[in-house]
Length: 387
Figure 1: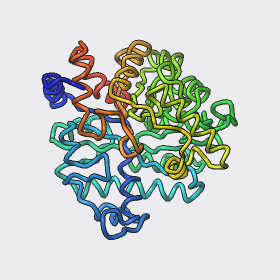
Figure 2: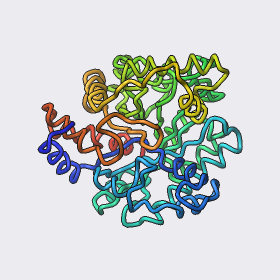
Figure 3: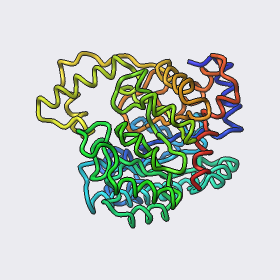
């Protein structure tokens, strides 16, 4: 935890340099909670305007990790909002859900123009930050959302989507996921074509969630810098979602950025081992560990796993410092995954805590220049290099 002086210095820094977060799942969280009637009257899940109108984000929302009050407290300057859809949605249903999520982000910005402004370029994002708004960029999570169509990919780019995560928890027909049984050995020929087309139209290649073979194949193909929008380091916590050191090293030559995430499963070796036991138990019970809803239901009834291991901000710092050592300070960032995970590290429970993390690094002797790169300058460079 940052000292009072460290937090204050961090707030001053983040007033000048935008805090860029690589991944926040508020759009889907709003969709789910509003459709369930958790904010009062039930909304229609597929109607973005209905989802947005059911909740007032200008006041504290205890069911969420993100609201506009805590975003201000956390000095959140630029946010990539995830337009994720679960892998159980496939084909045209996945495309429809992605489009609905894109519209939901636009509906949020329209409802809260004093807080949010949609941006599609680095210049627009910086302008919004200077105007006191959180610049709202869009990232599509999961290549299944394009339904094997380069036309859909191009359409999403025209709608302002700035990155595509090549897979989610399961393989696509053209790319292997980190958490599925390998099917392609990385990217297929069509997968390489997807990467080349993303380069051509200026959509950032996001390598979170993909298998190491897919990471390496994508780095072989891409001519532009990549992002890991929300991933941590395999050498610190041996979870398949994390990035191996040889891939981190390649970011130096590519110009890309690994945005360290706050998801406990990926931060702590004891927690990664607990999650591996959970997967074994779910496999034995015929349940799908990759399905987040199924996982939550199973965990709520699971009595054999013991308590989840404690995870703190220090675990996040361990990943940030390892990534700095291996990839270099020009290739690190932050991707919290707020509202995409049930639990978070102590000290980083919601979006108000970014200055605590930056302050803790300043207390540890990080320079303000290096903290500025981590906070947002590196990610902005990747975005600009893909503009």
